[in-house]
Amino acid sequence: MYQPRKIDFKEVLTIHDWAIKVYTITKDRYLNNSEIFDAVKNELSNWLNLKNCFNYKNDKIGFLIIHFGTEGIFSIINWWVGQNMLNTHIFFSDYSNPKIFNKVSGDGLAPCVWELEVINFEKNSWTEHVLKKFPSPEFRKYIEDNFSKVI
Image (cartoon, rainbow, N blue to C red):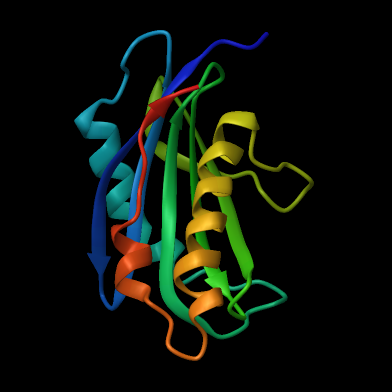
């Protein structure tokens, strides 16, 4: 069943030489617990070191979605590779133990409709500020571009 959810841009994190835009998505009530938010941010440097079968060159720019959903908390880290592809890793935490992150991507699970709203915005922003500006991408404008809304 579809219920509107609140999407909030939170901040840009600089971790090592990465720039990561952070969003939260919440349903029903604002569950954005700072303890959970801090736990996710603490894991982020480990997640940015993940490799996959297409471990292609990247600009160390991406975005994180922390979704306080029905089943639990989904943390989705995304970064741009090969200029026009998105590398995505999804982690799940139960509300009863939110500091334990289980990787759930890789077996077919993909982002949900609310998470795709953020991904679509980021795709459009990346296209406008980076891909269409080749050979002089405007990374700073991409990093500064964000949104918040209820959908």
